[in-house]
Amino acid sequence: MKAEEIKQLTVIGAGVMGHGIAELAALAELQVSLYDISDKLVQQGRQRIQGSLSKLAQKGLITPEQAQGALARLKPLTRLDEALHQADFVIEAAPEVLQLKQDIFRQLDQLAPPRAILASNTSSLPVSQIAQVTRRPQQVVGMHFFNPPVLMALVEIIKGQQTDEATVEATVELAKRLKKTPVVCRKDVRGFITSAIFEGFIGEAMWLVSRGAATVRQIDSRMKYHEGFPMGPFELADLTGLDISDNIHREAGLDNPPLLEELVRAGRLGRKSGRGFYDYASGAGADYRPEEGADFDPLPLYALMTNIAARLLADQVTTAAEIDTAMRLGGGFPLGPLAKADQIGLASILNWLDEAYRRYGDERYRASPLLRELVRQGRSIGH
Image (cartoon, rainbow, N blue to C red; front, side):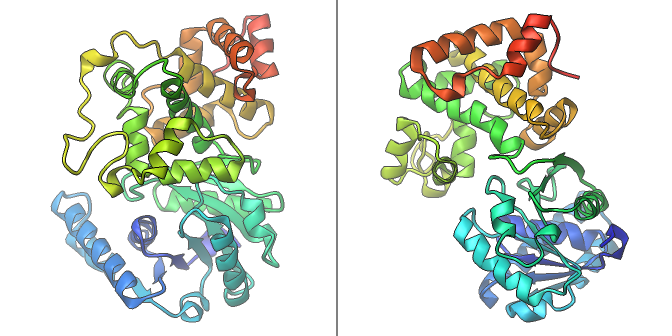
């Protein structure tokens, strides 16, 4: 299917991501079916879309007529067959549980027209494993939006093992039609681009605190106030949900940092539970101050992000330019991780990784052969 043939789009799931994606599609003048399992859920999604469109119109970002037109193109539905029978493109936006997504895709495959492309908004689960339960794996693709979809500029597109080029191209063009910047992950690797790099930003921060090398407040303060990130890694983890971080590690077969396990066991899941690394219910939340991070050296976080990026490059998953674009637009990074690595110096990063690997024996610290070769040749890793 070509992008210009996409007229009817169906979104599965009316939650935060689903209703945001539906709003984007309606604004792009597509006919949109928004499906969820109950009328209450789907009507809540519609109400949130209506509220968002009103705010956009009030701010002058769209006209009142555009808001009305988008809402008129939206159809809330609770019957899956009705939501799918005319779909040209389907985007699933269910929770990050592989079994759940596979169950949904079996139904999508049975009910959607043979021409329809089936996309998952997964941020880390293998697209190929989702596609294998269908009879059309060549038409299954990852289409990872960022929260909130209406405001975030990036869409990460993931090519599964059997996804054909026509499906990738149509998805790229659809992302552009939704006024987003697409980056393509050419191989279905763990974490794709953004979630993989974030493991260096958030995961390594958790390991540093677990080992007593720094405090939560020191790291968050340094990364926000001194390094220019929108928020520190622990504040970000609280925002996305510590159960999400825990589940991503488990799905990938990675060890959880002890600090993360401790909080999840205690039910401290971040903002949604009132407490995570910070106290949002009775405390001041993420109230770290600029001076608290003055003495923390952020090299470990940059080293891990660089090493992960180098592995992506070596495996020809994507390009240096797309890695930096993805992390600036999808992660709010002030500078792409590879541009930052060249600024720091690859030799310094390699030395830190080698020392960490000698000390801990953790494979995360084993330096990418590409990184080692670039240092030997005196070359940069950026673009």
